[in-house]
Every structure is written in C-alpha cells, then in structure tokens.
Length: 146
Image (cartoon, rainbow, N blue to C red; front, side, top):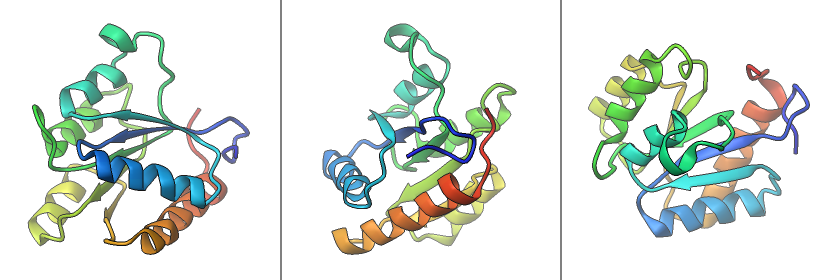
C-alpha cells in the first residue's frame, strides 16, 4: 500500500512486549496493509532511530509512529515530548497504542500533542479491526507530510 502522496509507508512501532509486537504485526498482515514496520523495544532506541544515531544512521524517517506509553529506559511520555519538541520530528503523526485506559494517561498524551490515543484490545479480531480503521484513516484519507 502507498500513502495518499504515493510513497511506501514507513511505520515505527515502539513496543517492549514481544507478544504485542507479534499481535500488531499480525493485525497489519491480516488487514493486508503492505507497509514497512520497524520495531524498537524501548524509548532510548526509539529516539536513536528517529535521530538516526548509532546503528540507525541509514533508516528511513517513519511516516507514522505507534508508541506504547510504558517502556523501559525512557517511557513513552518522554519520547512523545521529545518528538513533539523537535522541529524535524514534530510533524510525524504519533498514535499512542497502549493498554492503559487511565484518564490521566489520555490527558497527558494529548497534552503532549499525541495525534490519537488507542487502547489495545485484548483479542486479535478487535485488534485487526482497529488496525484497519487506522490504516484507512492515516493512509487513505489523510495526506502525510513528505
């Protein structure tokens, strides 16, 4: 699949739980979304990836970031804050994809300029539906910056 601007969509998934990584990958596969998904498992690696530091010097800048809140080393809130305060990164849409339903987490995330907040469903079927909805919105309707 290509975005509305015609290029292949690059997604950065920031998730420390291997089961959730697999579930997310399966949901994208089942939803027949042909994007390239890059995975990092903690907040520090996410920022290294985004700033193209260390082993990430040759990576593509993602078109969309899926960010868990509860991450080791640097949590998702800190990562989100750094992304949205960086002139070169702030335009990348960030989808909070977390198990937290806490109102405080929702408020903090939107206060830090998250583009949307999605609570991970417990089963694969619901997860596939959510991924399909995200895909339709972000890659078919929305025009992403180049």
